[in-house]
Image (cartoon, rainbow, N blue to C red):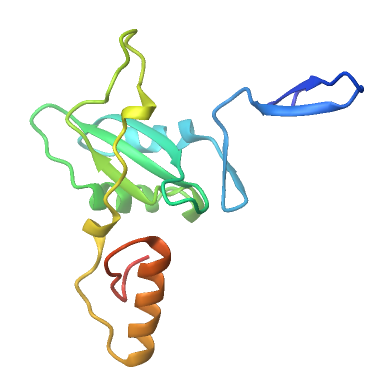
Length: 157
């Protein structure tokens, strides 16, 4: 079964889908290989390490989140890194958030501990522009409610 899907034969002779043999994820209907996004992130100046995972923190659809570690002595701005990759990648492959860490969490065996990666703080990226009229105020309120945020600005994506 050479599609990347992991399946098994059931006792009735049907194929049962078990999962994937690779890291490919589906984001908004597109198949995305996180390694491709990681390769672009690694090319951003100041990035020493990058990991991309699909997260589903609020029960909605999964979104890509990038975790980066800066090179020694450098400071990274997650929004600037996100902007840099948005010039290279199609929109659906651009991580919804870039979290800058001092180091990536590792298991006792030295492998990446994906469960220890912190959830992104989407509220920190809210723009400062307030709604200009009642319609924008209602829309911003609805988006904030759906996304589980305290507030959403009119320029937020």
